Image (cartoon, rainbow, N blue to C red):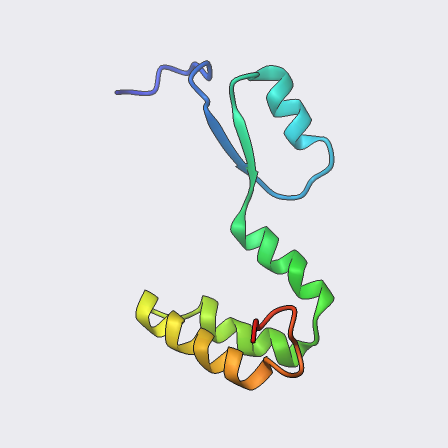
Length: 90
């Protein structure tokens, strides 16, 4: 289907954390689902942890494959389970 310049078919919008943006989208497009970008969610969550933890988490999010990410997550859980129980479930 070619784009005809019309935005009446918007069903989902992925946005950053700008205030009022989700409300503006749903006001113009009531059927649209608005979600926050996973990149913005990760970046926002890093405001609440140390840079050492962020560096460890980066290995998970930066993994080339799902298998490598799972292995990095397991390593993170082993390393941080005692120190960071809310992020690394025991």
